[in-house]
Image 1 (cartoon, helix red, strand yellow):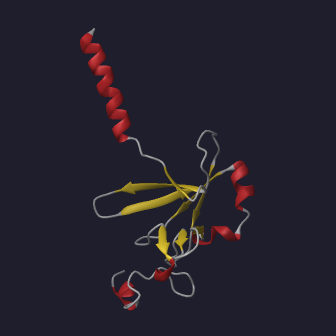
Image 2 (cartoon, rainbow, N blue to C red; image 1 turned 135 degrees about the vertical axis):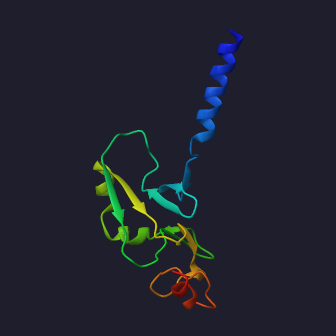
Image 3 (cartoon, rainbow, N blue to C red; image 1 turned 180 degrees about the vertical axis):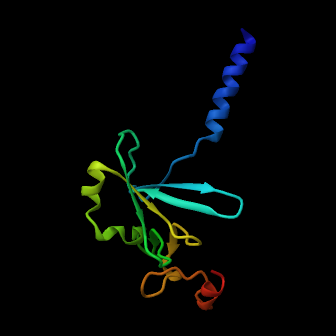
Length: 135
């Protein structure tokens, strides 16, 4: 009996350790990451409720390095969503789980000072051409 209890406890501990902690952003979205050896895919679910089963609406933004969220110096964080904010998000969310994939080498949340006038991510504002050379 003791062995069974120990085994069940270890199985529970393993399940908890491999689960992802929900990273809720601005009470609007949940961030997820798929990590591999040389790269990470970041994406967000534009919702905070995972209880309802719905089909997935997968949004892949264009070729610009736009972050999904902007963090201004003096205001609250706000969502760009890689252009998804051009659509009726609340209407999409009624029937689908809306998932937005972040651009490669672009953080999900970016400080406003690291954006150009078109809201594209510039890692080094003193040397913006460095991004082009490293892609």
